[in-house]
Image (cartoon, rainbow, N blue to C red; front, side, top):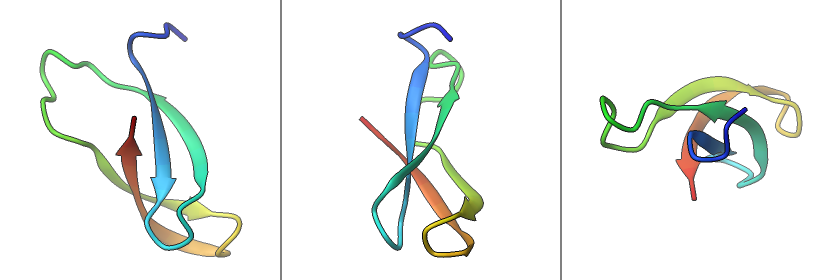
Length: 51
């Protein structure tokens, strides 16, 4: 993956980085929020984009 499009996804409950993803920064200006599975919490939680 290209480093300039790479973002980290952090669990909003336990604050751990679980996922890495890509984002088109020209079309998506705000921070991404996705509901994904957290293996530390063992449930689906909201994951937010971090720096």
